[in-house]
Length: 473
Image 1 (cartoon, rainbow, N blue to C red):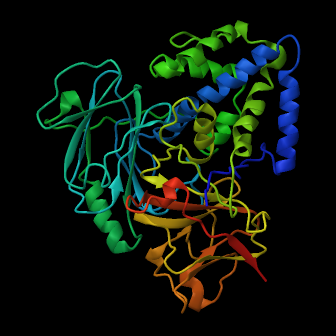
Image 2: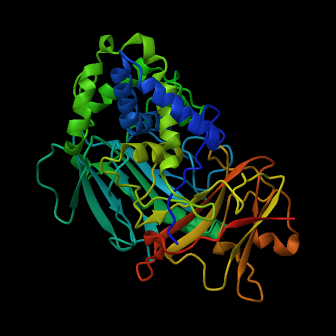
Image 3: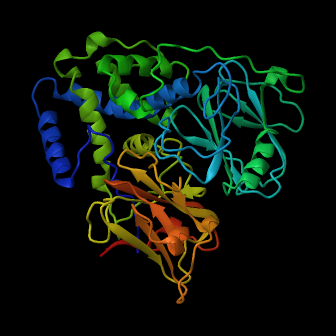
């Protein structure tokens, strides 16, 4: 059974609530594209918005995460390693679709002036991965247990134009853009003892500019911009930007984070509306009569991309994450609903918004997801099922449990199958180990499969059938 991604990804109040409404919107959008004078420019503006969505979102994410004087919690200044000491809770709004399986060990840094050196300690066999994203959300390198093992490692991340000599024992990773986001993940069971063990490993990570490598170094304090909105979700802030502000920022960012050579033909068309990489945005070329419609139309187009994809059993996913090539719509869609997604060899994220009967999940119902004997996800890392509200954020619940996985010591049925109970209220004390709490209203499920098995590649090739989630009386 082939499973592909179906973006039941209608997140946010400005997006469509049903397939019928989405189809209507697509028809309306097609009519707009068919308008006479100005329709070509409008289409170019939509394409440019979609193309730039990852870069603008990454920048807004960087601003929010680094807008502090000293590291703490989930934020830290540029060039500081941010060590998440516990899983995020339902108040977390910085990144959509957060996880509660790994402790983030991340940093934003700029390699435009000089390289930065990352030292990874001996992870002692623990599962981890340290993906490095460029400004366009491409995972350009991913050291970790799957790729480079768990021993101590040292890398120099160099900028696009850098040439020079590195110290002995330091391996070069060349970044395609000046901005780099290290979005490391270290597996943790969430117990006090395991938290302490991971904290010790986190404290051994080092990130320094090349000029300070091998010398005493204290990263400088950050500068706080009091004008930044530190409460509203980044995605919402991006989606609310007007077209002129959006394209002005995009052009500014492309000066130090240029598009790839594969993008050249696509991007060259945007000169007609004032967008040229390396130059300021020329807003005089953007027609004012349609500029106000560009952001919402483009965001709707991004979220409607699910209509091109197939789904089975109410689940879907794509193996086109982390490395997108010229698939700009998929890159924008993943940015909107799962910024920082890994390469498929490291993790695949099937998503479901509907049950086995194609009905929207709602906490007023009770559901069961049954894995037959021998049919748990074939992974070499780990798997989990995460609960999100309809905006792809965690849900408050009495257990403070945002995902469920084998670390909950799941009970197995006499026939060898495993049931997961997905509902608002407890299924009973004897079943709470297998309970994933749901909110009162609509929700979305994500099945994380880290390091799909190389011996059994059925997750990646789509032959492993994810069990449907069924409503029970």
